[in-house]
Picture 1: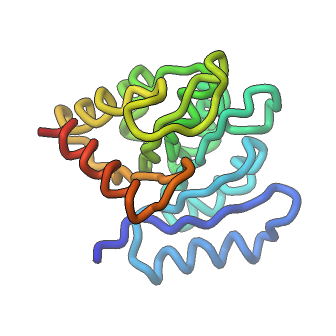
Picture 2: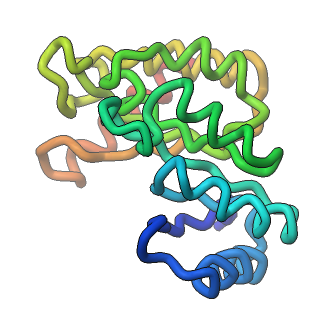
Length: 184
């Protein structure tokens, strides 16, 4: 087992500085190179000093809520997070980014060195009704994303994120087969 990241979600209103410090210490104890977190844009200013102190990257996980400016969802919100520190980056969720109406390919090309990890799932764009779908049935350019990472030999974990209805014992192997076929 090779550990790469610690997923530690933080909330601007509820997470204390002691809890933030604990997250960085736990990440160091685990020997990982980065933390992934679902949090708000406004949390970037609080996390930046900790990330700099520990010299550890933090990937902000994006979602599809583009109406709240404090949510990490748009190219601009990711860039605002990254502007707070060279250690802050993106845990780019390809499905959510697509659902929000954005193309993950240009984002990957521009910010690949600031991406801690990718969440790979297929979703429909909000303009197509939104929502989770089996791999290959949504609007996310999963194969193009995988090929781009492979072609450029970018060192970033790519996680299959299973969230659509169905039996994971049946569906996750289908997702893995999809990834293997895309990379063949």
